[in-house]
Length: 183
Image (tube, rainbow, N blue to C red; front, side, top):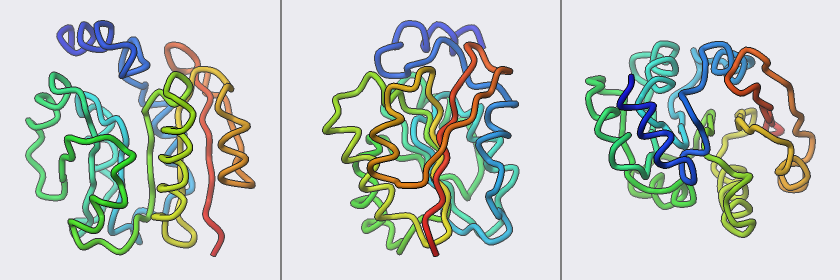
């Protein structure tokens, strides 16, 4: 855990976090997801695998979790998870469509995002959101954690009907963006 914390702090520009997301915040992000029906889930910014394990605990045995993580140090911890449902993607979230084509996956049921969109360039964020919207199946859920509301207007523009909730039981308290793709 200490090594992970040091990695988060040393790489705050890419992780956007000072420590892993709390169980409370992750549970809040996963509300409304029908895991029994999930076959393909994407996790952006999987970090050291803390949240990955939580997501895997909900998934059916036949499902796949595509864990996107660009930080090599954090990915090493992620690679210690021995679960056949886990597919580690050492690329950025902007490559989602390409990854799905390579994996021969038609769409994603749920996207859980921990990437620091508020500190990324706007064109990159727009690309990630557009790709996410395109790849989600009808009825699918997109969840994004943020520590400020800077990206709220952009999320609402790309994903109309999205909304934010506040989770105080996180360090620091977090805003959680939610969007369900219309059926």
